[in-house]
Length: 268
Picture 1 (cartoon, rainbow, N blue to C red):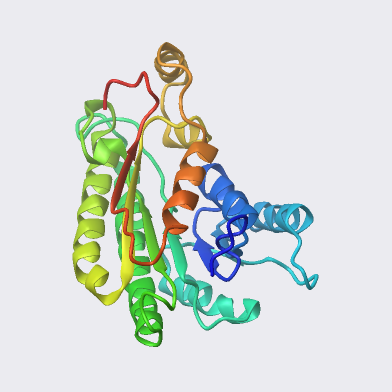
Picture 2 (cartoon, rainbow, N blue to C red; picture 1 turned 180 degrees about the vertical axis):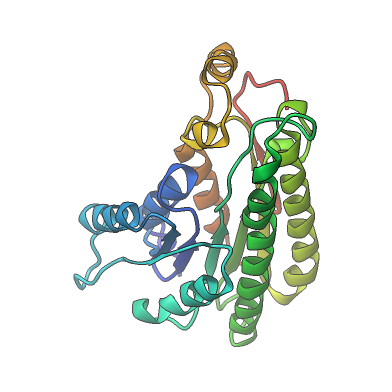
């Protein structure tokens, strides 16, 4: 029986890109719902600080750590393997929530963006996501085959897309193209894995205020004016709460797609 206050108390969530933004707040929110966590990002110091914060705010009943960290490139297969195996440190063979969040933006269109950054962005946003979807999908199917579904519980693969992967925007069309591809991967994975008891959810956020814009190289003044014009924009916790709600549903309830925009965001 699922606890009302801690609906994820028996579950383990793997979150990539957990050092900041949506990934960080997702980790904090899922911990508040009772989940144990595998945290991944490139910045080990940030992950260590987050893990300590989670242990301080959401201690386990037996005093053990609620999370483990796996620092490294989420697009590297060896790091993915290490992440998937880290659940043994938390008392389970595999995580049963996997949040494919690691990614980066890039300012500009196919005509204006920095071509020297294209390959790294495609590797991170598309190939890295595809490798994790493949590895996690295989493990989650094995997990569901070992359970009496749906009574045995849910397995979730949550994939972060973007509204610019649904409605392309010329100011970030190269980034948007990677999210169009991720959206397609998510839908294909849903059709393949859903019948096997694995839920696949695509989350498409609109404008979220975080360090994402700075890393992507967006013009601080112009993008700031855009955000100011549609205030209040989304926060990472807005997306984290939505993910928490989705993965807390009964195993036979599958929320497949969620487009989340600030109320005043007209486009994209």
